[in-house]
Length: 116
Length: 131
Image 1 (cartoon, rainbow over the protein chains, first blue to last red):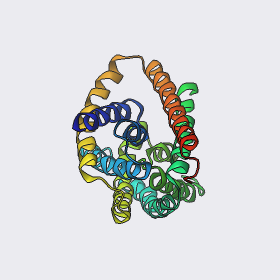
Image 2 (cartoon, rainbow over the protein chains, first blue to last red):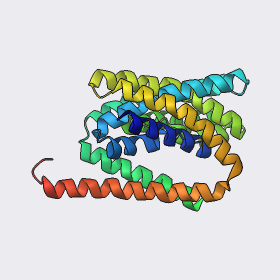
Image 3 (cartoon, one colour):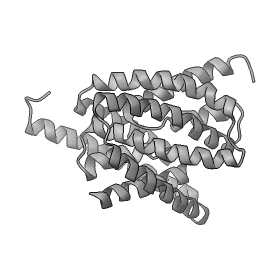
């Protein structure tokens, strides 16, 4: 179990460093397929992992003076409101619907990576 | 910055938050292009996106904990190990052809998407009565 979780973390870290997109996009499907976590729990747990990684990354960048605080607030504050709405909507979706929606999101991002 | 940029950034920020809450992603996929649109450079955009992800993910975590979906220990393990993974990723990115890995990962994501969708379809055949 712990080895699989570590593997998921490793893949997520490599993925986010190489493509600049967060690890969440790989953490959720890997939690579903490798440790058989239900989709809602996988999404919640992915957010927890992202919180750890993004905090570490933001601190490192901030120490180098590369963070623009005003811009972070400009997009981060509306995103907090959006996150409350998003998690609320998610509770109303069935595991199947959520998995299919996530698959669609993955396919869109995957195709974008291929053709861009 | 032109007049429409700030309202547009607020709308895109809101959308990133919804995406984050529904799918359990950070929202960087929308944050970074928004910040580039606002005129930030690539490094500044990545750095600022990471900072914006912190309150977004924290909000999602608090809500999901209340809904009983959060598994804190797996989250900590994955988060901590992915910091190490990011270091490896930086090394890889400087050594390999970025276009090739980007396309390879793109194909992988589409394959994973197909797997998830087929998994749902198979389950539905096996347990047709459960909605």
